[in-house]
Image (cartoon, rainbow, N blue to C red; front, side):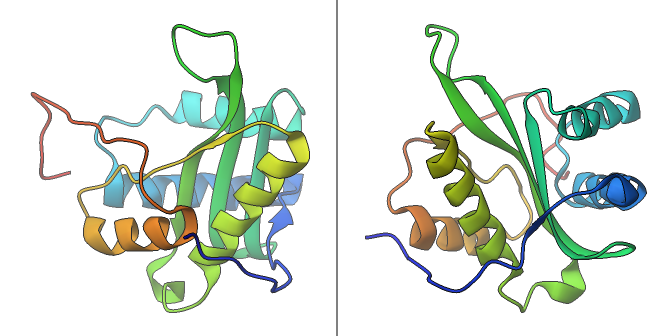
Length: 159
């Protein structure tokens, strides 16, 4: 059984004035969870898909200049063997000082709501070697049993 909430979302759609702070949160997330090197060009391009309305959506918690958390979503192919699309969660992050809040739950609820409104499945998961069990617990409460797992070889496991 998945966890449901009727609480109003504190997540808002990111605005252009949030751009610099979105980049800051992306860097913070990468510092904590990044498995590969970060391309600032690619990050900027991904963020711009939201502002240009070309297949991306970014939700944030907090006022402009004081963001607490972020979720980045994009519409993309579900898998290499299909033309079907999903709403992929490519970035979910809450600053450490706000992790004892409902921010992570609210970001996940926002993604689920967007998936429902758009009418395509949400693809999300935990890509991290930092606090992985706690994150998995939250996702299991919000989504139920996972749909699989992934593994990496020849990657620095300390990141």
